[in-house]
Structures are given as structure tokens and as C-alpha cells.
Image 1 (spheres, protein in one colour):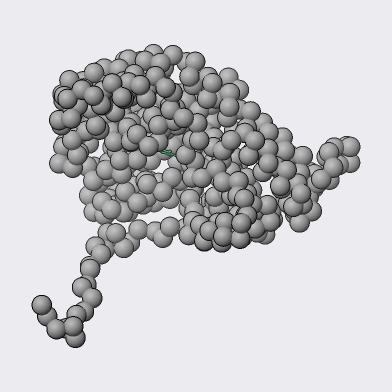
Image 2 (tube, protein in one colour):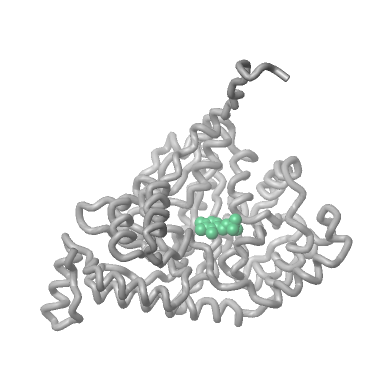
Length: 423
Ligand SMILES: *Cc1c(COP(=O)(O)O)cnc(C)c1O
């Protein structure tokens, strides 16, 4: 044993690729949340967009049965993977009217985050450009950086319905680009995309040999009769496109870690070749349970959507009553809400915690273009959503300043509800 005086702290080198990742921007909010909880404040906290509803019992029962089967205690079998891929292809065909080959065009994933995170390692060389929306789910940018790629922002602005302006990207950038990431229905802006938009992206991408990735995690979370199309429905998409589907939001299965990629055969085989070196597919029992999920009819999702719709209408109606300028989303379970004029998103989010005990995500945490917004989520009990509105009213947390205040005054003048903007 070395003498005590010789002890020194071992140096742990963190790789540059890890150090270059953007800082976690919700740190400040997390700190305020902890402080508020310590002071005994009861927070209405819908979390990070993790559904509060349980996984349907049929799926849980199937997991139990599958877990008891010794074959599932071994590495996931080709049979389990094939059965899952067949069911995923069948579901995809039913839902979007697109025929895909389960053997070649479908790949099971350990959650879509895993697949999205690994994709650039398979298709992006150091220095290659990757087009990444801003604001966005942070994985696209992080995965690009981890692969040595160069993220180029595609700003999503309200005036364009939070769809990127493809013509804003110059020709050199298109030429150097390998991948463009899309995510509709969108987190965090709740925007949706139509086939016309996907068609325009596919056309550009085909011209410049760019891979189009659509993260469709919210494809089934839609309202008011709106049904989200698939990227792969448009002409030519199967030549350049890959779409990522998740069980997390559709079936309340965030913890289960399962999803799938579907699309161009060579993109599927490239991602599969990379993943063969890193993992061995999801747990066979989880694949079995996810296969069961894909066989469920529309009843389950209908019940889930009814819960979100009620919460959405309570929150939108309540906030409008306070003079907030908010729009009911057609897709996703988020509200993307402008901050009061001149107030940044962290400051506004902090205010909401400290004055009303309501937790929202500051838009800046999703990218520079997210500044000026906060994201409210519908993933806590309906009664808590009602309580959030009540607390905002009591705290006088209207949305002061700018056009919102003007609209609220108009609303008042027309004899609208009391409780307009104050604080
Ligand atoms: C929740 C979410 C996912 C889900 O990822 P899983 O790994 O399948 O749980 C993917 N993309 C976005 C944008 C999300 O918000």
C-alpha cells in the first residue's frame, strides 16, 4: 500500500466528442424546482413529456408471459425480430397505405432515441454537414456532434408554421449535407407537416443525395380529426427516407425502450450494420409485447387521445381566459407558448415556478430559436392541469405586453372573462 502522502486524484480524460456537447439548458429550472420543493411548494410538474398514463394491460400481460419463456432469456432470436418486423410492416401498411418489406425495410430499435442517436455514426463522416431543426429534440444535434458532423441550423419560425425554409439553405450546404432531420408532429412546437412539405424535402434531398430522417414519435398523438401523414407516403421518399416510430407516446411505453425504423433498404442495412457492433436488439420479451401493441385496434389510442384532448382544452381555454395567446395543437401533447414581451424563456419559466408552482420547459433549452417561448406539456393528471390554470389565475400571471395584452384588452372590451393580464 502506498503511503498516504502519495495519494492523488486519478485523472479521467473526457473525450473531446463528449466535452463538445451543448450544456444541459434545463439546469437552472431544475435548480429552481428543487428549491421550490424544499420550501414545501406543491409543483404541478408534467415532467419532460413522459406520459403519466399507464401502458395498456394487454401489453403488460404479454410481457409477463414472454418473460416466463426461457427462449427470451437468451439473446433475442431471429424469430422474435422477424415476428416484430412483420407486425410493424403490417401496422405501417394499414396506417399509411405504404407497402414495406419487413425483412429489408424495417429495423427494431431500443427506443427511437437509440436509433436516431446512432444514425449519424452510420452515415456521417467527420466534417459532413447535417441539417438540424432549431428548436428541436436535442438528440439530432448531439448525435451529429458525436459523429464529428457539423450541425447546420434549420430555424423553425411561427410565420412559416414551424416548417424549415428549404430555400434558405444555400446550394453549397445542400451539396455538403448528408442528413436532414425532421420531426413532425413536432416537439417542442407542436407543429404538423403535410405531404406537400415532405414532397419538397424529398425532391431537394434526392437532387443532392441527402438522407431524410423523420422522427415520427408523435404520429398517433393528433386531434380534431387530423391524421399525420408519413414521410414515406410521398413519391421518391423510399429512395432517400427513413422514418422513426416509437411506442413511448402511442402506447405509454417510455420505460420499455422499443421502437423501429422503416424506410429505404440501404439505409436500414447501414444502420443495422452499425448496430450489430453495439447491441443485440431489444429484449425478446419486450419485442413480443411490442408486437402485441401493434395488433391493438384504435380503441386504446382513442382513449388516450380523449384524455389529452380534455387536458388540452382545459389548458388552452384557461390560458385564453387569462389573456394568453395560445393555440390548441393538432399534434403532440405540447403547447408552445410565447413568453411575455421582453422576457426570456428561463426567466418566464422561473416566474411560473416561483409564483404559481407550475413547471414548464424554457424554449431556449431546445435551441437558440426556441428563445421567446416555453413548452407546456399535457402529461399530468387532468385535475392538476385544472389546478395549474387556477394557480396562474390566482398569481395574476397573465401574459403582459405586446400584442397579447392588446388582444386580451379587446377580449375584455367585448365583455370577456375577468382575470386578464396583470403581473
Ligand atoms: C419522446 C420522443 C421520442 C421517443 O423516443 P423513444 O426513444 O422511442 O422513447 C423521440 N423523439 C421525440 C421528438 C420525442 O419527443
